[in-house]
Length: 124
Image (tube, rainbow, N blue to C red; front, side, top):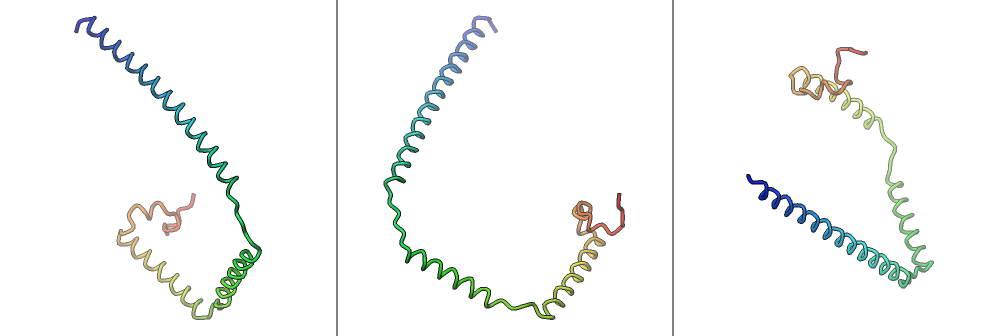
């Protein structure tokens, strides 16, 4: 390739990059101006908006929340012996199934990554 062709290509690329950089700077400045205008407009809207709350409205919300909390707490019952037995049985079933899955090779790489699943007793 001749030197003058390479020079023309490089010069064109350089001017293109310079033009692109100038355009990006102008766009950046325009975006900053728009953001500042939007910020000022939002600030004016907030200042002009009058939020009127009455004590009656706040009290009604408070009463509604208290009623909801009281109904949820009122419906709760302490755990029975059956709840505790179900928890114990489910824990043993999970341990048995995890051991069976590990023996059958279904756990794969997961078993090596979770130390609690390794039953060999290898502790460092």
